[in-house]
Image (cartoon, rainbow, N blue to C red; front, side, top):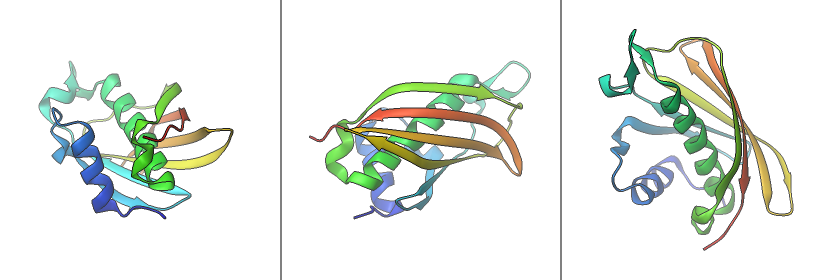
Length: 135
């Protein structure tokens, strides 16, 4: 059963109570793809008014984590990142869309690819591995 975007946003807010999750919006969720949108605040920028790398990495990891939960249900909240490779391709300044696709997996491990876009521009590419753990 795939969780809908509202349920996934609730999971994100409950999982990270000290984070202002209003900057995130789950735009789409299916077994094959999840789209997480993040608005950018002044605190997310580094000198030069460019979105900081850790913000982009957080977005990619958050999209993959939510995709695990979308695919396996809320019991998969305990899933953890096993690896994350990030490629920074262009500077970003405003709202970013993270399109996370499921690439496959075996024995409790799953692989995701996350394309980060600002408008039509591909600004980052991440490969994320997750160990699926259920509460």
